[in-house]
Length: 495
Image (tube, rainbow, N blue to C red; front, side, top):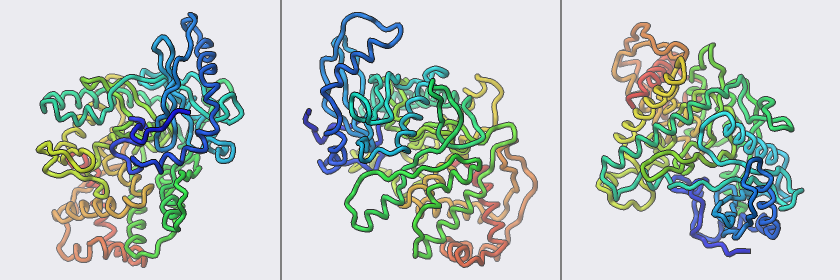
């Protein structure tokens, strides 16, 4: 088996600049040792060649595999580059738990859904994504492992193009805008895959969609609790959930499985989070509540040309139908980082192009600018494709971070405190317009609520958290919070 250099990682699968799971040491690769030992690499060349010859309308000339490359590591997969003598390049993608001892039925369903959903999107959209040549959701095959065999897509990491400090500022901005426009055009196409339930797509034996079933989530809370208990097992813990008929159930799927905390502030924070989730408006009657969306809508999963043109969207592991409020029209995650204080690390030195200790970040002003670019791009593509529906893009700034707070315990307190403090600032202005934020007809002014100074007393994060735990939240405080939250959503395009 080929050696495994510790610095070789996949640019595009949860291992790049914005992930907390990055590691440059050898320990992380120990997670893959069992599956790498079980893969029958000695059979891969023959299998790939046979698979390629079986593709309809493919060039029938004699060709063969000339190299199985050094393995590439993601957070959840190991990938083997496969190179043919005519220059064609494929990738064998194998899950980290892809051994007979660890690969479960839920993992098999997730892999099958990923592969067949990718094929569906290749057939019915122009979204650029890898072609799935073959897959297996079991270890009972020639390679002795579950896998997806895809083509290797040429392109540059979006992170490197986005933060290319060697180019003039106006050139970088033009590349960024082009990239966002292309991504918006791809994401709008997912709107045709809408459902009245949330979960992963299930398919029949011919590869055609049957409906919505359960889907698999990374259980970050369980992983964190395991580490607290001194368990050195670093394998991923998954939770199977759904299907959901209620969007709020989707938001709280992982939150409901968290171990109860003893901290008063943390308990209150979770209660406040649940309040905010309950106040998220549902889509209008003319829209189904769930829509297909990319599972990890972050910068590491986009490949672009040097001028910013989109070449491929990769890593569809976990693709599913999700609430429209965090669906295909939401902001890309790297444009909302300023609302997650736990991970956002911009400094003024970055504005002067000083090399950061960690990752590059955009300033809050730049993030607001590119959010406006993306929201306009989504709207533009909607208008080109037919009658536009309510645009959830700007409100996804809040919705996406609430979902992150529910799913990732280290981020919960910082995000909820950020949302709460912004609501308080809105309330402190003294007069609140009462808005309809149901999401079906847009915002409409219904009147004004005047806020008296004495009503603001006790409207601080700790006091409200404690009041929620002790079930003594005053009605006028609840009223202020819900009015502030609705106005927060209505003003999200300017945040």
